Image (cartoon, rainbow, N blue to C red; front, side, top):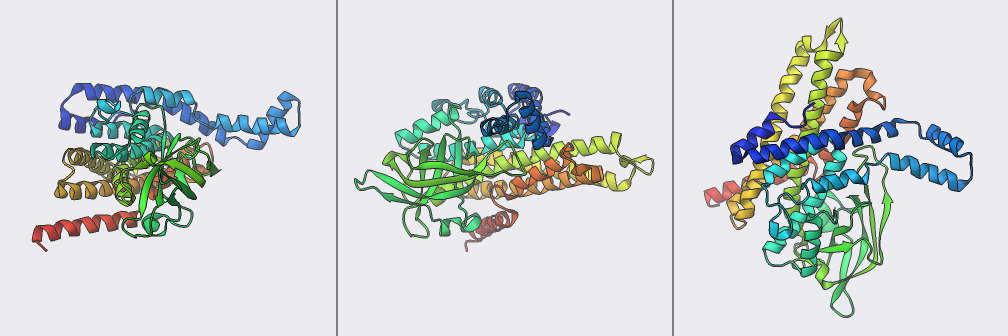
Length: 450
């Protein structure tokens, strides 16, 4: 299985005609295949084992049965189910994290579509690692925009540079246990009030379903600063070590198991004024801006997963599974599915890279309203298309395997479960559809002078 597709190369050639970018992509693909994929597969092997048998074996070797030894054994098993830190460090060293940001900020100043190609490649081998860096990039994109607008404090700018350089990992903290999705801005209960000296804020509340909850160093937390429905949310950066802040429950989940998802608890968390990102009350605008770019990264990861499931489906149909003494490829239904997946995955990749290109153009001309509409429509289109085809590709793979797809050792079911992250993450299809329709209507009315 190649981790670079012709479609990725063709887009980069069409946009930039620079062999250096192709060589960088090929090099990253080799790294993903040789380092990331084996690490991901190793964790899958350990998760497929019976944990009780594992504990029994460890205890037998140690010849001790006290509670401390049992707890140590459990932690040892859990550590085997996680990607080694050295793999994350190698990803940082590959330049992925700071790829698209300016050299002034500590980045490489490379094109955003190149980053999206890298992310698709990473997502093909490990959705867990892919989403770890996609979320951190979402936070960076928001801070970058505030920096360019001239409304980012020295502390926030220093933090942005640390994330770009790979010294810190960020988490995007919007959702809450009783308020998520399209109603989050109206129902958010996490609050930030001015402290007694008026030189900072005190935060109270909690955030749920937060990716990178367990692994992040800095958290971009949205909190209510007034009851104004339009301008009542502000954005703050909170360091992990801040008194009153803690990571609560880390959820055991069935998808992207090498990525942490959890709860954040804030109790009288006092932070200085410089930890506020941008202007007070403009958090809703910042969140939407960050989500627009974040949806492109999710589309890239979903396209990578769809491509992997498609290639495994092809392998199974051509060389593996038989029905009635025929390989599956000999049946018209299988050929129809291959044609469908080929068309849809290529369309998802094209839509994702077009959205990435439009984002790059909008970043150069952020006051262009027509360009903004096109960019937002494209990013929502790409996420919607890619997330749905990822599910379909994984569904067809499971059906090609039949009943054997349900055993732990078969990756088909894991792919399908991982695809749900892309269905729910960065907005469900219904929200995306509403956003697309809203923007198309705006474009129509503007063109008609209505």
